[in-house]
Amino acid sequence: DRGSVQGAIGVRRAEEGEKLRTLDGVERTLHAEDLVITDERGPIGLAGVMGGADTEIADHDDTERSTSEVVVEAAHFNAVSVARTARRHKLSSEASRRFERGVDPEAAAAAAQRTVDLLVLLAGGTAEAGVTEIIAPFAPRTITIPADHPDKVAGVTYGRETVVRRLQEIGCDVYGQDELIVTVPSWRPDLTDANDLAEEVIRLEGYENLPSTLPKPHAGRGLTHRQRLHRRIGRALAGSGYVEAPNYPFVAEQVFDQLGLDADDPARRVVKLANPLNDEEPALRTTLLPGLLGALRRNDGRGSHDLALFETGLVFHPREAGAVAGHLPVDRRPTDEEIARLDAVLPEQPRHVAVVLTGAREQAGWWGKGRPADWADAVEAARTVAREAGAELIVRKAQYGPWHPGRCAELAVVTDGAERVVGHAGELHPRVLKALGLPERTCAMELDVDALERAGDDTPQAPGISTFPVATQDVALVVDKPVPAAEVEAALREGAGELLESIRLFDVYENPEQLGEGRKSLAYALRFRAGDRTLTVDEASAARDAAVALANERTGAELRG
Image (cartoon, rainbow, N blue to C red; front, top):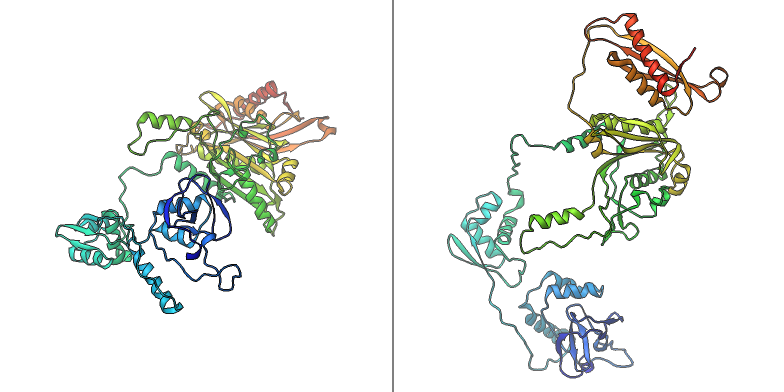
């Protein structure tokens, strides 16, 4: 509104803290990097983003003032400056979106004249003589490009004539023979180098006409040992009836309270993101269970009550408190020392595998009764993973975090002569189920796959096949209830010696009247076989007696009468 403008119109950077009320009625505090349109009073517009309310054109029925004279202004503003101003004030407008994408710097004068012509033609206006025009002189932008460069990029022979014709179609002036000198039109600020021009030629010739050529890998290269193991684990769990459910690696810190972790649990030490996707989940996960249990809860809430889900993925553990990664240079390749310093503060990222189960593990049908999922299925999933890694898994009773204290198994392996806990499996605690809104008797398992890989030997070994018959010996041992069956089995296996081919627990029996209070009976099937002869009854019996003797010595097991 010409009547609302006082003095000359100018353009400058805003002063820190200046105020401007924009057309949307919001009073904004300006930043020193904001570009503004001004009159003698101060800012009257946020350049390239939105005009000011003080000079807004008034409606014809406005009782306070009406607009009879207007000033037509057309300008070209820097795309980066406009984008920063729009984001700084959280003000996305039609003008800012256009300037951010780049506009023709030579179009301003033509646009202003067209506006004046329309006001005169359609609105009955009268144009005053004269115009103020300020132009920063600039030379046309030229790019040198070999005539066959688009051919090399696309892998197709276009020829010089086709390249020149396509570039002229987009407004370029082209000169030269083998080396083309291309003058880029002012309305294409996105064309800055030879590859941009090659892309235009290829686009106009048609992407669908490009040949599809697969790269040829070098012989002897393929998946790494780690990648092959991860794929085998996924196939094994899928074959056992689990469905893969990948999740985002972000968690809220309060989930550790819901899982019942101790205050000093290492899993509570998290890496926090500076720019999280969701303010409610600002940390990187240290366990796969929150994401998997969330997926189980969603599916159960939508009517799928028989669920078995698994996930393999990275977890993140900070190396040390207060460590901050430095900024690598962008004007040169970082040195090996700079990269090493950066790697030293990155979190450890081992790969884990986890499963969750609820509902029926086996459905009922004509073949018989089904059965619900229980803690034993979670333990068996861990054994399935360990077999793929070629690791021997040690399973024993334990108590940890979200698992039920009476139905929790600690999973360990032996690495470099030392035993290391690599995970847990079992039924989740009722308090955890209530806190997370999960179905009753939900079970879970989580393992450190990288630790399993270090402890295992997954080199395929063909099983030995003997032509001699097997000798089977069954033993029923009575032990105290707290004694784990795994300890009894380990003692039997060691005591039986090299003749033992396999051992299997096939019955657990409890009867206070027959066995005594606090006692249980464990029945094992022992299979003996020699690779070079048929075993005699005495040899098999001697091996069995040696196994029972060692079990008695270590666990107090007694043969059941």
